[in-house]
Image 1 (cartoon, one colour):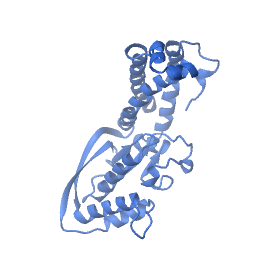
Image 2: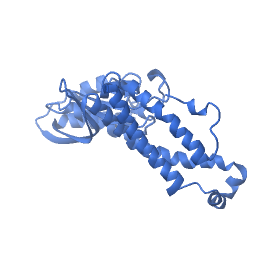
Image 3: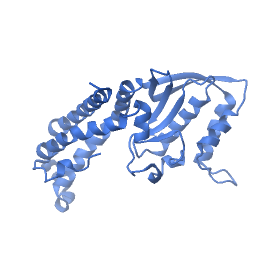
Length: 279
């Protein structure tokens, strides 16, 4: 079995475990009960077909667990690709106090307009250059807990990733940027690179990515510490990872679509529906 095949199977294992739990939730533990929906929302039930709300019922129970799945998939990619992946890993180091002050200064200026000055726009290269120029004899011990830590077993390079859903909120992104600033500010530096990563791009190309909340903190189109979609998977798992990811999802997608149509919605799949929406 090739490394790509091993990765594909590991990815499918994570997705199947999640989907089987979702199916059990919506079919057994917390099913959509038409009579309950009618009694709680009689106006909605009178105006809108029940199938619409049945779909919403499924969506809520599907989307919530997916937040944790991205990190699990990243661990799989790192372990099968680079060689080592750890979730919620602490990176311990030391940062001089002036660098820490400059980190807070930049975050504040990105968030708020100062009197007489506009709120600054994100620019990673100039921001990190300004921070690293900070000097102080006062050294502060710092611990950064990264979402995923990965290590290339061949060249021993170490990577930290802040992994967020493709449409993250502003507060999450601010926290991630502060962590990445601190990782690069440690003396000596404990990682070779740190990234803010989104597992896929709902806008298609990176230049088209236009979700406004993370754009307050990162230049999503140009900052080199930002990875979106295939850039992320190739970096954490090596060449071929994104292809393995796409193949793995598409192979099992048809099975679960069929189950959702038949077991949850109680209808036959429309012609061609099982092949729609492939990655």
